Length: 295
Image 1 (cartoon, rainbow, N blue to C red):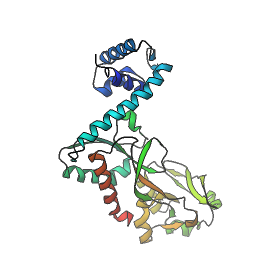
Image 2: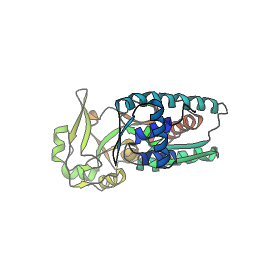
Image 3: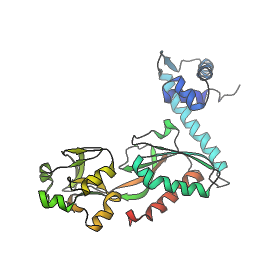
Image 4: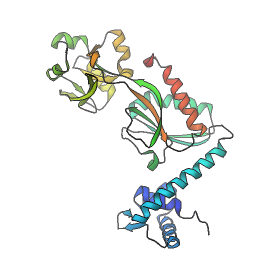
């Protein structure tokens, strides 16, 4: 009897919450996954799941067993990667995610350069503005913008990310220039994906709710509206840097810029960085540094 039999199926069901979703992740049939989990429960002489028609939930024994199985999986993958890394050439499948606009503009072209250098590599890129779970989604790498929330992940800083409050000269000529954060309430603010803007005051970060007659969850669209003189905007440096240099936009309340955030590469903890991930992260860091937006 293979003592590993059923462990991968059990972890997949526990993480996905459904036998069908686990089967899809593993490329097996639902009946096959169910059969393997049932055999595992029989060998252990304990129930691992509470089952219902739509969902499954871990028993107390299942929760304890899951923690040990995940560590075993990590150790097994580490061993396989360590041997595979002896060759050092990026190959196989690399699955990654990034925000849509930033990915299209900055990340995907660099990944395509990487693909040209390493023809044995296969890449799947999921561009999404949702924060995808790397472990549950089977992802090797995520490019994240701003501040990091997930302490389970290891991170490499790829590039700076400075937020700018700015407006076109035409808007400022008509409505005046704000000189304090309290004056923002009197201005038309161009709202992107959030109506809470971050600032710094007296050494601490604060979030202010802003209002305006225009909203769109696209940085490029916010930039276009700001250049037309519709109102104030708060955007990262890579959107506005060239326009600040040309004078098409004016930087405002520079003393209240929020603490610098960054562009990050995230990958799961306690996993050896395979050549495909390690070398791609290095290329992304080098490539972003050469972009004119970061000069």
